[in-house]
Image (cartoon, rainbow, N blue to C red; front, top):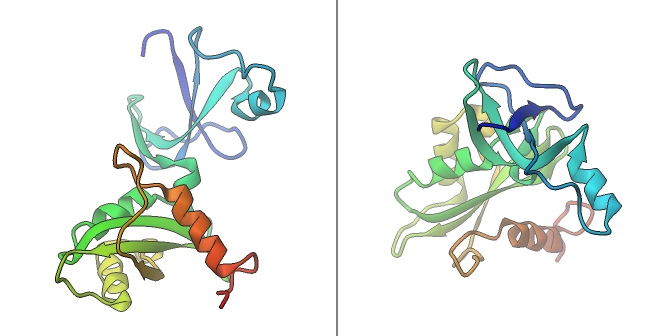
Length: 185
């Protein structure tokens, strides 16, 4: 965009490679970007760094400067040091004939740090098991991107405009497992 400086940076603020593969947070700088939050220095310091605004969007950039948005930063699953897009996994889940609706969140894992967990709404009359869904993702994605657990639900929480409320799904998950990451009876 004319007049806008766009960079994609890693967690250390270093620019990612312009190879269309390495994921980084999209940052922007221009005369149209805010100067800060009104009377909230902490929030301002969190999103404005080195003159750039941290958008919270994750993406890749190729050698021509084209940016591909892959996910929101808070929705990325970091498993064994690999960044996994929840959107990519959800796209595969929607290809399963029994899946009507799907959402993927990161859940704690002792070995990998986090792994993808799917919340699934099945189509009317359709049948699928947790193992069916896990096997489907394993056969259609790199193995480290496959879901390691599935929760079947009647419906996913959504906004009035139909956007899935992943924050509510994450909160519900943590309410069920407690702070230790183990299921609470």
